[in-house]
Amino acid sequence: MKAALISLGSQSSIMTAEAMSKYFEQVDMVQLKNIEVKLGKEAGIFYEGKRFERYDCVYVKGSFRYANLLCSIASMLEGKIPYMPLPSSTFTTVHNKLLTHLILQQHNIPMPRTYISSTVGSAKELLKEVKYPIVMKFPEGTQGKGVMFADSLSSASSLLDALGVLNQPFIIQEYVDTGGTDIRALVVGDKVVAAMKRKAQKEEKRANIHAGGSGEAVLLNREVSKIALDTAKALKADICGVDILEGPLGPVVIEANVSPGLQGLNKVSTIDVPDEIAKFFYRKTEEIVNAGKKVAVDEVMKGISLENGEDSLSQEVISELKFRGDKIILPEWITKIAKFDDRKEYSIKVKKGRLEVEEFKK
Ligand SMILES: Nc1ncnc2c1ncn2[C@@H]1O[C@H](COP(=O)(O)OP(=O)(O)O)[C@@H](O)[C@H]1O
Ligand SMILES: [Mg+2]
Image 1 (spheres, rainbow, N blue to C red):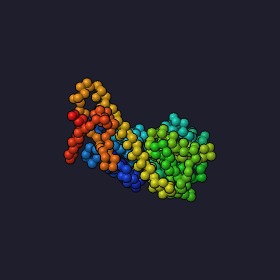
Image 2 (image 1 turned 180 degrees about the vertical axis):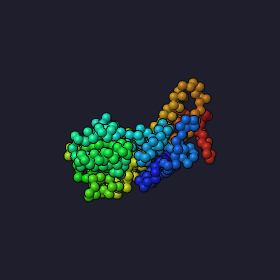
Image 3 (image 1 turned 120 degrees about the vertical axis):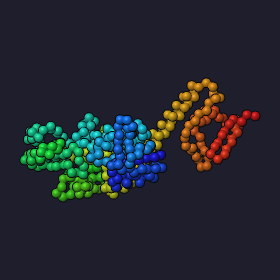
């Protein structure tokens, strides 16, 4: 089976592709920036000018800056590629914290109190009523870069003015006191494969590794684990990093990430994180590809049962051969069509590249 990983080529992507090559026959690393999506006549996905080839599994990832491209690629491949860990809809929701929170709300997943205002004026009214400190975030942003904290109405108000001048959309969020820690849980399929507790540097509230935070492995309790799994499921993501704050009133989700960094997590974890991801992708692809083959065979069988002149039947199916040791194992449907029987005798003619088995008529 053939897989492709479309990404910006980060170290985490390289680690994932290397792990995938242990399972898939071929894994192509495809640079997201060199992909073009064409719609209308001759629609398709083009990589370095050529039509993107057929794959059994395609994992598309990249930062929020490429959300439109990621969504377009996934949308064009949907229904054509047997397995994609992330559907196109995930790219529009996950790369925007507000849209993520709206989906989480629909699924009753706990989150900090979050406010959306259309104007700076109405946000200021809101800021008179909230408890401090307060968090303000860009809906799109990662690595802690779009997250600001305000200790008082006056500092929140000046931040708000700056955001207004820049025309920068924002969300306002309750500050959840965790002593500068957060939890990053990595969900793959329906399992949390690894988790770490991150602690912000001194004088810093953001626990992101990119903001200087340090990580240590953590075993999640049932409640936190369920919240991480529910989040990935709500976002329809088979791979998803979920950021959770364990606040005084219980765990809350602040963010989901479908292009999670693996280096930090892999370093602190006892399991091989990229291998867990690769193994899951392979199993899932195999399951879907085999189910597809079964449907194709069922179609052949249905066609045959509709035909009358059985002697004239000759069905051609292109398939791989299965071997057990040096022996060839043919699938059950071949026995059914051929009506071979272990009480009869057969004439077998074989030469290089060809095999013929025929009922022996004395
Ligand atoms: N509501 C909040 N209360 C307290 N700390 C927060 C809150 N939201 C974010 N943080 C801190 O800021 C960090 C970055 O926030 P997050 O929403 O995950 O954005 P990013 O996409 O930049 O990682 C978190 O890991 C956490 O340490
Ligand atoms: Mg985060």
